[in-house]
Image (cartoon, rainbow, N blue to C red; front, side):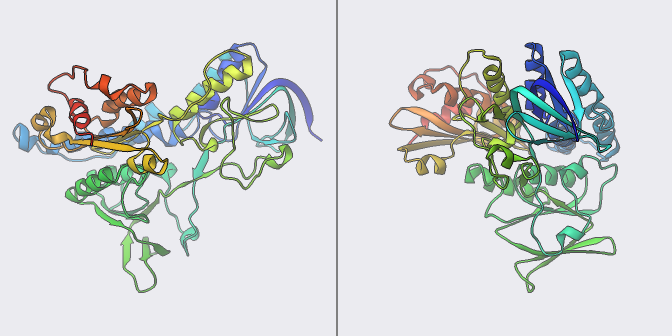
Length: 461
């Protein structure tokens, strides 16, 4: 029988949003118990955003060095993975140790517990410690779920028995293989494929859908495929992987049936989807479906009686910035502070390939599916003044999607060098529903990449 402890709030899952919420609630005077079965800080600082962007930064430096010959003279580049692995180990993850994050929470006044937290009825959480001990926390104010996702296990014949990589393995690499297949052409797959290729790995991307980054505009996916092909990455879209095997240190993938093409590579990275961590959470004890892919929440992130949910499991975008945004809304609701409710009409995202692919709001197809009367405008980035002077590596585009009846942008894409930064202007316009007529009266600095926004607005038709 487990010990029972009365507290105000229990937070299960301490990714960035959960950590921020636990910190804010503790600073507001609540007795907070913060629970995580792995590393405090979550996927982003240890396996996602931070270490992967160090990898991207390194590969971009290599690409720029190779462009010296076209721009400034001669340069010899010898890639080395050691500096990348060292930065990730020492600067990003501290050897995958979360003590700094734990100390932050403790200093804020929260109690941190490493263990598996499960719901046990309204306001009740049972935490099983690594040594098997069990404690039941009775939360007077309630419980917050922020359990995130894990790499999806694909139902491909033979895959489960092989030593394939996920994103969690790639960031721990200390040396690189000669060849690799990347299964999945979404943001993670595309970023990692380009990184590996720029460090000399022979890379093939196998994508089930018809284009890369399928959540973005088709133009972005097509351009990214052209860039990858020019860098020596083989891209295979619209193909099905029917079986995987591993023998003698090599992976073999069979595509589109037994008579289909066979790919052989030293390593296999599976980057095709995520699975929400909802299946071992005790959702059934509070009347929720444990087999669901998301937890339904209202505009204050309430999921039930004394229950809130934030982050990937809410289905409003599997991005750190969405979790952080939701944590602020939920914290206000929990502590009784006034403030705006959650809105998701202008969720931004960036895929950190070279060129970067930034998007916000609705794509053209999503806007049409929503029944809007749509106008679109676009501008190639390389035809802008900055794109022209940038030279090699300056490809990209700006595309805007307008609700013609209201005269405001409902979506936009910014692809190119620093595409995610160019996106800031467009994200503000979509979020604040700035009239297109007003945007056209702006003075756009010359010569800049973002001046392509003015050209795209002029192309609305």
